Length: 157
Image 1 (cartoon, helix red, strand yellow):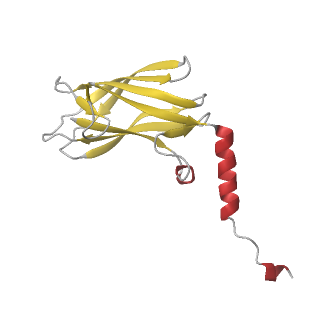
Image 2 (cartoon, helix red, strand yellow):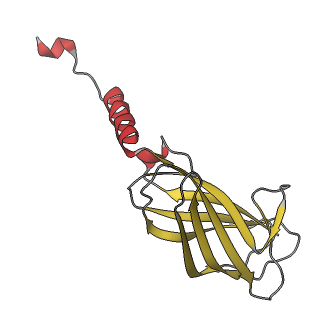
Image 3 (tube, rainbow, N blue to C red):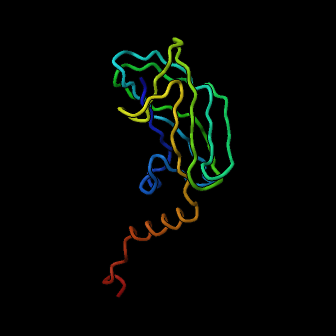
């Protein structure tokens, strides 16, 4: 039994603004998953074979045939895996990210978005949110301005 969490790789400055499931339209990012073995026995690893990406409000979809290794995990062990590198999304809103996978031993992989959630077999789904680039840049600019030190009034006289 494997639990998955989605994350985007962003700078520390961007992380102060974005959640782990957000990216900015038009900006290159790496997308990864955090996997946890929530079962009572070892998981022998596997492979992600397909990644599907579909805009929720638009008729935009992409499917990628991949060969991304899922490492072996002991119970309660967590690992981060990058599943898409240098990924750029050119629309705003939400998108459905789906993974298809197989275990190395051929047994079904029960997957959960979170411990105690509903199980799926050999697949996993999550939502990625794509934010407006211009609004993100304005917010960053305002944040930087607020944190800049103001000159000491006594020094200017």
